[in-house]
Image 1: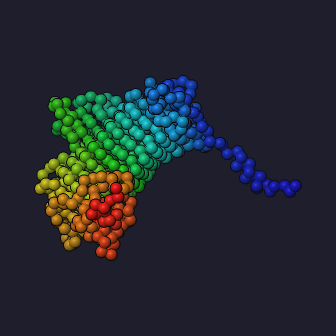
Image 2: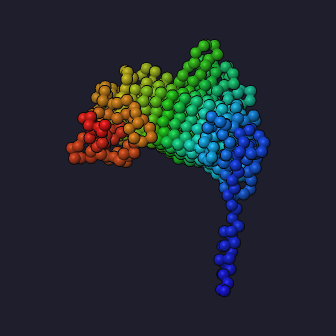
Length: 501
């Protein structure tokens, strides 16, 4: 028998000595003891490079398909280089209830480079400072959240212990990917009614540092920053009712995600009512420097902020901001930009967005969109205003714009001869899902947006994922539509009510 070459023997030996993936099963819903989640985390090996997976096989309670782990103390910090906490298994649904205690943490000293959490509900976690349900302090940790529900997590502002709070549910310094997940009723709150601090950001999520962020196909609803104070003269909240980003030279991409009824609010201890819209960015507040933020095919409704009812870009110097195929509907600001505001910001491109029924409550400011930034592209957008305020106000140079539709006062431009002021947009229909992942606002056949956009600045797809441009009026020519929706041939076929029964 011919001897194997020495190099091949070395390779085979290396392969067969690789560490095998390890699985630990959680078999008890108790807070501590053998077979519990606590024991599984304590058993993680901080030095092995193999995947360490925690799974769940908790015996069901008769009549209740949900296995709920209620903590009576914070869980130990996660260790291990590559960790997967996987709720997809024999137990139908796993809920980890923090019961007022922080749930998962990764400390700066950890060896963890990859953490994935999958198919879990994290509920009721709470902490003073950052990340009520998940806190990642190690910048070198890449976290992935797939089909995770964050529900009623809290971070507290406490002048005595910590006057700043970041991320009611999640705080991270590392790279973060969120897919098919939900954030519901998470909060940053004051520990008392008269805390003299408004240093709070991200009612559900806060990310900082130089690592990328991706959010796709998710839902943020009912998240809030709710502070009690008398700042600056009456009441002041933190920024980013759902999300706050403070990234440096990093790429953030948020797509196919709905933001509904998020807000930044405040209670002055001398009065008996709440003030909404006392912090910037009702849904999202964006800070940082450099890099790029892309908002693609998202839906914003009922959010309430100060500058930026839905989205506020707050002095992110040197950043590029791209907004494409988003729908902003009935958001409210107490100051500028009922839909979106960009303050001393970035290089902005806005292509094929729909703004409708957003309101700025301060007279003379823009209902739909307001910017003090360099606008390098403003094409194919719908701005459907509702009162005497301007649809949009742009306070600095606008390099290129055209083919936008305005209900009343148009954005300032010295060279835009193709946009129109057309009055009430009664053809713009109520938001609903007609394909894709988020609600959109389709329009009637023959409406002004159909085949009236600029092909040279047309998004490749619409908010539902349909290719652009399409022939929306059946004249034999495919032209880009204005707004977030491309009026498809399917819409045209059914325009006379010949739907299948």
